[in-house]
Length: 131
Image (cartoon, rainbow, N blue to C red; front, top):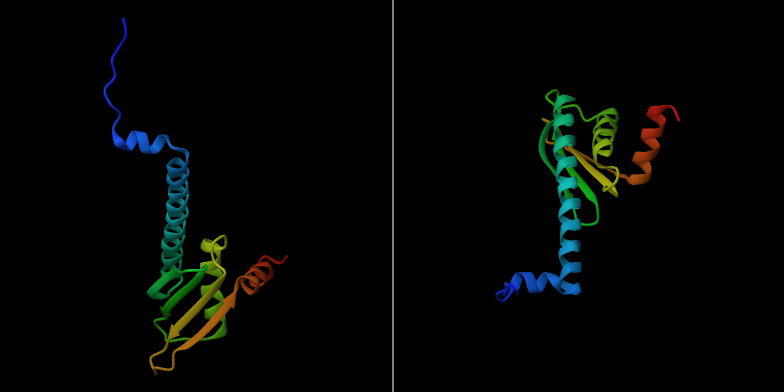
């Protein structure tokens, strides 16, 4: 006795072709990386808030450039605050970030912006670890 099967749905036929299957696998990989980046940005934002920063914007642009628009309640824009914010972001996004641009807002409207490369962030991180 044989079992008759009806025609396959177009989606099933599409997934059976190797090109389409490869495309689906690449999409899944991209979505996985995207989810990891979103999770890293979210965790970095939470850590920045816990460290006393108000986060106005935190995003990753194409090419792995992270942009952080931050403010401290005391309006401080000291080098130490830039380095602290950079270290927090690096802790959560070191695998994805190629550079981090940090804007610290000040009450006098003299905002300062500092950009760190991945190499600079790695070096700061090693210095903090004592290695």
